[in-house]
Image (cartoon, rainbow, N blue to C red; front, side, top):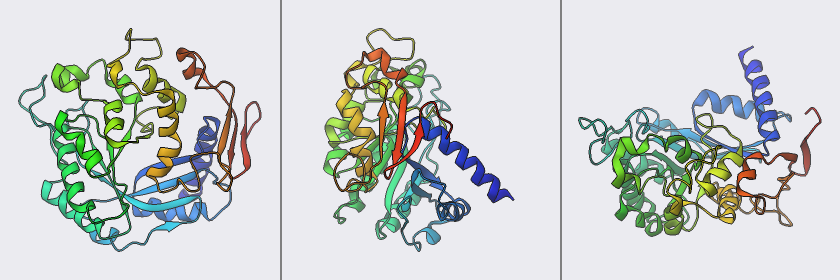
Length: 333
């Protein structure tokens, strides 16, 4: 059946993820059918990798979503929603305040009207669900940061996230601190986009794009992911991109906007304890401590001390979830 085929493919995908040292993933934007299947699959024992699910929310399904109850069986957690607020920079779908530098007749566009975005955020803010919104353009980021500020105020521990937070106006970084908003970032995007991004938005706006250090300075933490399948899920390619701001060939010399590089310690935290915090899981995961789930990996080299250019080539020797060794290098899974 289709469901069995999906399950087989998921187990194959799990093997690939375990081999790269991933113990938890975020699935940002699940529909009803996918949620039903994942609950069914996670009721069996073979799916070991932990999934933090976000329900795709829009104006059409808002009424159904807010009626849902959070779900968590230890491996599959569903306590978040994902809003898609604008498009991508490459396609000029990201919503900007001023026109695109290389196509002055467009500023991009929102995927939902500001009124609808406010309606969604207001409705979800009354539920236990965390809000996560995809925002690339400076106009989208400002709108969401302001809406978050308006509706997160009364919540004690909202931990709402902006996914990408890619292009911001200088004066908008402060909202992350003021409203305790978490930037969820993908440093590998900076490397994929650096060849053409300035053509799209010009030299002034690019200085506050992919500005991960500035985001961290304002928010106190960043959650780091890869945005797979847009980018490869190898975390060490992403680690290298965040620290070196260079591609695999060492370009550009000196690094792309190197002032926004993160330190190795910051990247490590962004991939572990801060990522766990951004999913409300820091008490169980994100660090190797007594009393926590034993989700950990063993590497052939230490990313904190190897030469910068060697980070990309780090290999995983063991991947352990809940104390169970699920991947050993050189042995079939």
